[in-house]
Length: 255
Length: 349
Image (cartoon, rainbow over all chains, first blue to last red; front, side, top):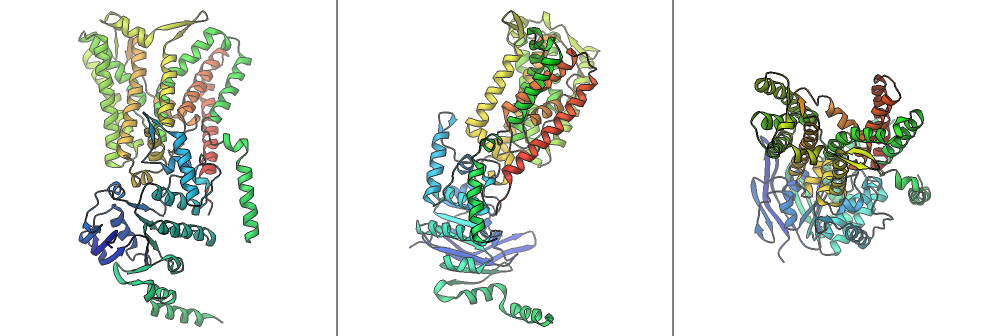
């Protein structure tokens, strides 16, 4: 099976700063590839390349086995690669249905087909298991988890084959994070390839099939779920030795 | 917080949110409509001429020329930008029309077309500069405002030797153009200026475009969050340039109404109007930060403006009080808008 997306030795520099170097990974249909790393590890740069926000300067980006360079987020979207950004998922002051169809509005003649837009939004959200009383309410009145879910449902509805989620569970409570992860799993079960960016291995491990660990712009390793446990994942991510040292230090100051 | 409490507050949220108040509150024009009712009732009681047919025609007329541009400015503000050059643009377009038809003997219709092209070009330039440089539109259009003001005075003085252009009545094509832009129509025995019709048409068009078209959806989106809009493929730059151009076009309409009605134009006209447009839009529910507002609200804002300005005249008060009223009204509107936005944007984790 050809991977939906594959990166081979991809790199990106901003001026003299090497943000990413020599990273390789694959995203298959119906699988979740998790990208893990601490702040500044290069996670954001990697997804910006995948989402078409930035162009890579080294290596190759392959979609369906063919090398591409996305010219814009719209270009990536047209090839079925949809990105749900952490803070950029929705416009808070706009209603749920207006957000849902933003950029792909259904029209009847010169006008918006509002009835259809509302109905489709309600149905698409219901399919994802999100029951909204009123799709006319501003998205800002939804909870953080629900907003992420609206963005995910939108990407799925508009035929995304690859879903890139940038820290969807950051800043969410335990319950809300669970809600989002459930919808990540649902998107995966529908056959989408999912890229889940997170710095929380406990969120990544239950849904992930493959784990790409980044540190300081380089890949520490890419592991299948069978090869690695959650403890080892956490240890590698945090830089095991440093964590042990920290634990020792903190214990030391205890009276 | 225990899970039980969370469940209870969740259920409560759904119950409370379905109330009538909650469904009305998010409508940006509700506050302005209430304000208009209060102002209307107040001057109807306090003065006698306010409700007379001639009185109604006067304040509707005052509101109309303000309202035409205010609804365009409202769309621009919803799109997240300001235009300080819109006021002085009403004078610039009038001057272009007047100079071309009185000095060069152009037919008024051709002169109107030329001034429209001039307005659209300046509007597009405003928009292009803003999206190109990423500078705040406040400062960019302040520049165009000053430039146009200087151009108005300088060119008028060069051409006429004075600071006004007059004599439109003798220009070819004045009759038909005057009929379209500056005639009056009779309703129940009272003459109403046709500018009121233009105001209603502008409001209806702006409102339909904003609420019922794809472009309108983009206007809300680019003002609400340019980054989100770009990420989902909305042409942010094009949307903003179109909004600036439309605002200049609305200013041209008012400039044309003025020049054909008064048949002369002062080169220093229109200064200060830009703030009146913005104030009308804000009273009508537009947020200064963009992403929220309504065209109907801005039209009602202009109506409040017209009613208060003429009502104070009818009540024989000093017009100084109008400024006080305006200030209080603006502050009240901003406070209400702010509360509404917080309500709509409140973040639940």
